[in-house]
Image (cartoon, rainbow, N blue to C red; front, side, top):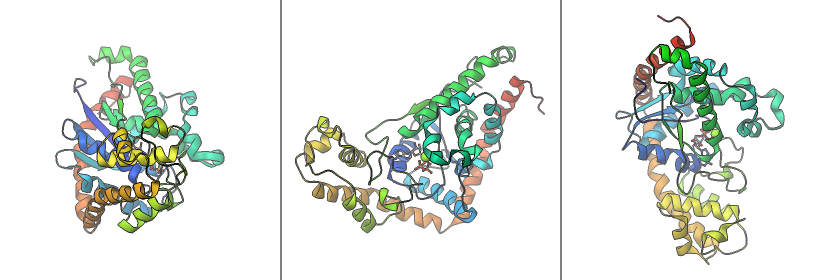
Length: 345
Ligand code: ATP
Ligand code: MG
């Protein structure tokens, strides 16, 4: 029961246009991990509603994230793809974790501070407690590995703190029931490669985001070749030529970002990119960057569109994935309740 070795869980919010940051920071890792691990990939719709979503758009976005997963190479038969709200255990375990996590822990979350900004008093309670739901997403399956972008590092640490506190607070009850003392594993973040934090094309100090109001800040997965070319052409850079070595990228966040994107798309190290383009102007580098981005994203965008023409097929995938997710989640949630002292059927 608690002895399963590796299980991968990760999620993407259906909050709008998926972008190059999501692809390089998360989805490409999801695809690669399928080779060696049992994986659950979740469209985290309950996270999306922590900020207002237009219901029709939300429906569309849930299907579009699913279609993008599949178009990118995630296999929903060999692994599990589903939308979070279909498995009620996520919300139930999140409530339990609301009672485990401490106010002081959540008060430290920089993500909330950034997202709520000046309108803190007006932010939803859900946006504040979102990291507890994220811990529940992972631990509902006793997942051990979580591929995410760099921006989720702090939330993963919180998930580990929650797992640890639960295991300690209930250690007596856990032992009495004959469970392993690590009732919940401490999940490991997998944050690797040259593009773990893709930055906005207009501002090298802020992350590329779905929720950024300006479309020029990001390359969307569904952008056509013209849009990709235009966005890279207008991407902010500095007046110096590209450096020939990595040290030359220091204090040049926009240059560093574009080099990281190229390296990740080409599957090579940043040094290699600089060896090839060092000393050159951004204009010609940007043309090469456009070429490789179109080559990678074009077929995924086209396949996503094709899948979106058959929403019933996507819905069937999500429904089947949720049924299989429930089979894993139900005993873990029941055991969790028993450990706490809640009576179950
Ligand atoms: P939102 O602005 O609505 O929060 P988002 O772009 O941050 O959207 P999420 O759905 O929150 O996207 O994140 C999905 C996954 O993509 C997470 O693993 C996250 O770490 C990763 N990710 C998001 N943005 C980037 C980025 N700019 N670079 C690398 N990874 C990213
Ligand atoms: Mg995000």
